[in-house]
Image (cartoon, rainbow, N blue to C red; front, side, top):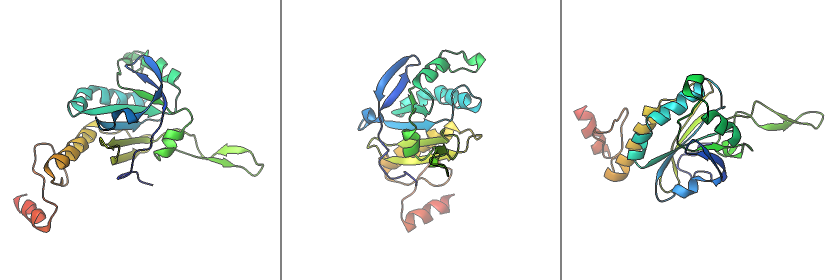
Length: 209
């Protein structure tokens, strides 16, 4: 079930902030009315594609901040696992130097509520609890506006890394719409024209391009 247009699921969980401090009860609710949020999930700590994504978001962090956007990551690993990975140098496959929060979804409810959990629990013929798959998170990404509403979501399968520039483009498109009241056509980039959401506006735009 898509979350676009709906309130982002609320949660409170342990997280590592500033690359070193473990906090309890971290929540996206602290940004309501103040900031946009890019909330993204990754499958596992100490893996291969995941650090490339976390570093890619870190490298663009100032661009997000200049747009009043908080970047927050999440996986089903524990906060202790996150902390340990954050102590490992980049040259050794670690993420030391990542400064945005990393949430620990150890009970897997956050991933489930955001629709990115790769499996589910079930009961076998002997009445024993089992799982339909490894219960980790797909590569989900959610753009949440200042009212806590999901405006964009993207979910990739485990082998497929994301494009951080596309996340920035979606932030730009949302903020352009909010400021100008014009919609953003295919391949729109910051600095380009939007168009009026009317037949006349579409015709005028298409006649110019």
